[in-house]
Length: 195
Image 1 (cartoon, rainbow, N blue to C red):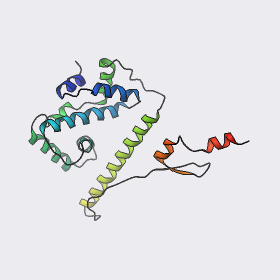
Image 2 (cartoon, helix red, strand yellow; image 1 turned 135 degrees about the horizontal axis):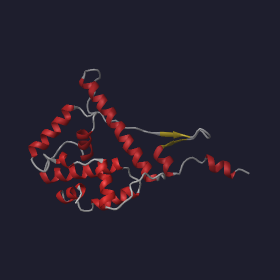
Image 3 (cartoon, helix red, strand yellow; image 1 turned 90 degrees about the horizontal axis):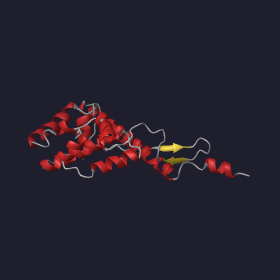
Image 4 (cartoon, rainbow, N blue to C red; image 1 turned 45 degrees about the vertical axis):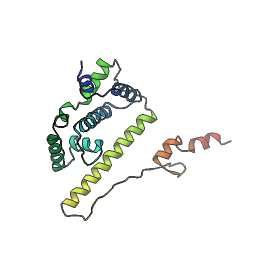
């Protein structure tokens, strides 16, 4: 039994293999699958240990795994997990890498992990959402560091991003999600329809 199967069994994560298959089939990257599995592990461990931490599971996972997280915040989360006892205290031991995800897909689920040259709208949206979330987190952490260093005055900041796409041919500007939903700009259709 591979590590992912053992973890699925240990944390009673029924249905996770189906979700992994579906996400991989939609073009989700191995790193995104790694995050999906690890956040599910963390969520179950927190629930089983009846731990209430400030923030959603993805934010807590981000603090534990990302280099730009402040050491103090990481230590605070780890201390709370340790005080809660198993399974929360040893949850990081169950986290898996994207290489483990790849082996699980190949050896346990019989799926091809070769990079697909074809991109889908769903995989593109996943990539954009991941990038936005990461950028937002980096900005928030940087502002908090500036505040803690006494260089800016702020409290309880909420960073949001608005991405716009402008077609250079027509000059039309769209919100990113509207642009994707409508299938791009009309510039090509207009020129094709011209007599």
